[in-house]
Length: 167
Image 1 (cartoon, rainbow, N blue to C red):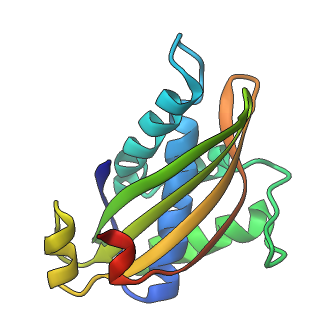
Image 2: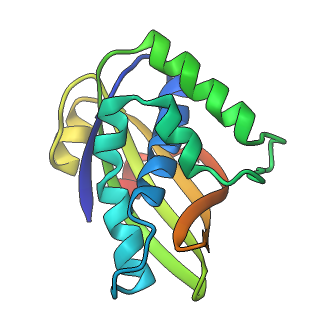
């Protein structure tokens, strides 16, 4: 499944950070149960990342990250929020194409999401277009937990991805 996301930017590190934060926001926008499966709600949240990214609202991003967020780099919610704030100040428009490769439901309230994202200053609606414009490619592994009806990102890691990951 591909979703097109727009938000601001230059710089590989900033792009990856903003994508991560955009995904945090999207994952939580539709976290409330409405009779859909957890996987359906997670996919809806990922699709909604475009809205969160376009608005570039720091307050929205903060809501979507668990207060006890932590990752392998020692970052917490405050650190992720600072990264987003800096990125929003520096960037105006970037286009992101995501591919959800896998959603693993660990139980009813916990999930892991593996997705790939290509980021560039030019729009791309298909993978071949993305690769042709030599976009920055990244893999994201997100840890999610549903709390009080909302999915929250509790941890994440990301790395550069290769062209083969998108094919």
